[in-house]
Structures are given as structure tokens and as C-alpha cells.
Length: 78
Figure 1 (spheres, one colour):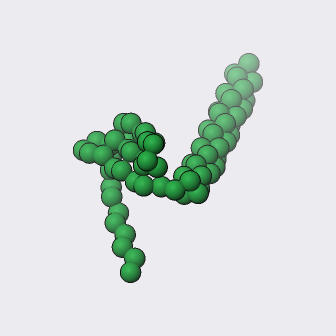
Figure 2 (cartoon, one colour; figure 1 turned 90 degrees about the vertical axis):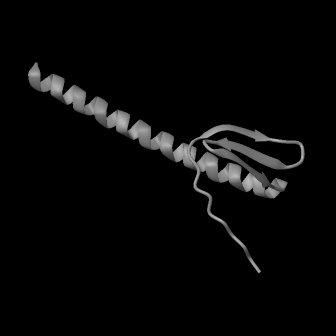
């Protein structure tokens, strides 16, 4: 039998990974404690690192577009 639970939490205010393979997340309103083995921890790290890289690329693309628009506007007013 498989049991799952969805927990909706606000912002994470603190994260800690303890000696007993337990990820502790402090959130507005409480704390989540999750037992993880090494392979699960590595899988989570991979997903998070990929997402961070994706977000960084999106931000860089937005910054490039904004810079191009500003340069174009400066050329039009010159």
C-alpha cells in the first residue's frame, strides 16, 4: 500500500540536513522532517540544480532583451 500526503507550506526560512539522513525544513507555521537516503538526496539535488540553472538562464535572457530594448530606444531618440 502506498500512502502520500501533500503539504502546502509557506516560505522556507531555514534548511538543515542532519547526521541521521534527515532533511529539516523550517517553514512559516512549522517544520518538515524528511528521512532521505543518499540516492534520494542526490536525486533532489540534481532536480534543484537543474531548476536553478533554468531560472538563471531565463533571467539572463530577460536581461538581454531589456538591454536590447533600451539600446534600441536610445538609438531612436538620438
